[in-house]
Image (tube, rainbow over all chains, first blue to last red; front, top):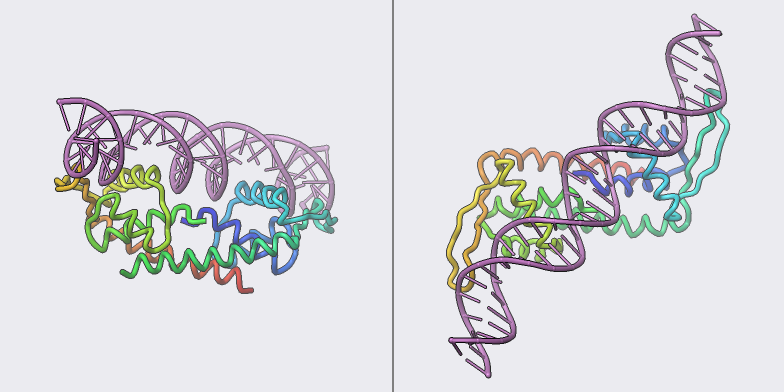
Length: 99
Length: 99
DNA sequence: CATACTACCATGCATTGCAAGGTACTATTT
DNA sequence: AAATAGTACCTTGCAATGCATGGTAGTATG
């Protein structure tokens, strides 16, 4: 049911601050959206290739280095489009359901 | 973006009254959800095989006979589940977006 | 030095929606 | 009567997406 919406959620999370994969998974889990690692990593790579995200490496005191993702200006512009699409989808489904 | 949600929309439309493929496409179009024939037919077949829909043939005065789909009791029960899932999804996405 | 943990990533699969094309019956026009 | 257009059914092949699984490598911990 939630296919394709993950993309929107990831950009939303990152629009609120840079994060690495585990951060993102935690934030999603906090909102009760469970996502698998094997889903997230390829998605982040796709969004980076699309120009919506960039990343930098940061050393960690407890474990291997982390890949911090950051939303780009282009990503923010796309997020505005996604806001509109999402609202439209919600309106459409609700209209179809209640009549 | 709307992947997987079509299933919910089709059941919603049919919960409001029996319909054949073109009827359904028109109702979806009326709510600005554009769906292709090649998407709808397999989906109806899947839902019928899942036990959520049944169908009957009806002669038409203007063209070939029509396959009218009807939601089953099992389909209505499943639709209630989908209502909950949908509401949950909307809440989750909105929560992630606005904080 | 071995085990556990963290964080990265890749491969293969199932599902789903779309594009394109095909069949068959009915109605309309020439 | 034949050709064209319209309606309604359906299939096949493709691309995208999410999941399950498993793998690599660096960093602690016992």
